[in-house]
Length: 268
Ligand code: HEM
Image (cartoon, rainbow, N blue to C red):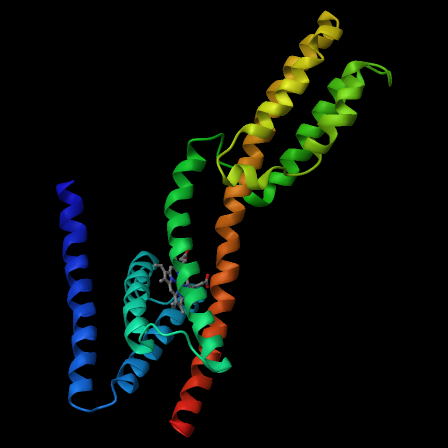
């Protein structure tokens, strides 16, 4: 706890001082009859350009320009501070013209997706290591195919369309073992679909002979393995997906910011 205070205390204090400087500076410029929106506007644009440069830094990771971890810390700090500058600059008003509206949507979307992604990238890794084995996202479909082959082999031994195991496979197991499933439920940390499936699997047990019941036990084990793979697919997928929102919004933000500057200087 003390270590955390030592680590975060100075950072929070610096954030507070800079945020207060922006708010008080804006007021002082107003009193001095100097249009403060020009100052906060250029400041915000500078911060947005700096934040966007993080993407460039990630592409040229071989250059000796500081570690990725330090860049990320600075990125989050400047990103959050830009929120204060944005509120001061826009006076927290809903924009009226469409260029300003697009700019506001792009900024708020980039900011919001950044905060969300930050939360996800901190929250998801511990959840993943608590469930199943570490697995590479791109290999998940291959592992699912291997599981399906094993289930098909177990069911195939029943060898009759009327057999409860064959029917169970056709109705419940084939869809489950064919692709990643229940992404939404996994994101909600719910095990409901797995429990339902296991209940259905169990309900056909009393119609099986001893050998088939043994195979059913193995199938139930494979359902757990597949469910863990689905869980990793859902959570790793969302970790990848949010950057596909954050990055395009950044490009949009840069374009609309330039348009905004041109309009303000042409008609302001
Ligand atoms: C509002 C202006 C912002 C802009 C223009 C911006 C821009 C960017 C860019 C260009 C990247 C690199 C994406 C890539 O190439 O993979 C990035 C990544 C990231 N941003 Fe932002 N960002 C902003 C705000 C924020 C905020 C407010 C936060 C969090 C508080 C944040 C958190 C992150 C995180 C966690 C990453 C990913 C780091 C990684 O996994 O490598 N961003 N951002």
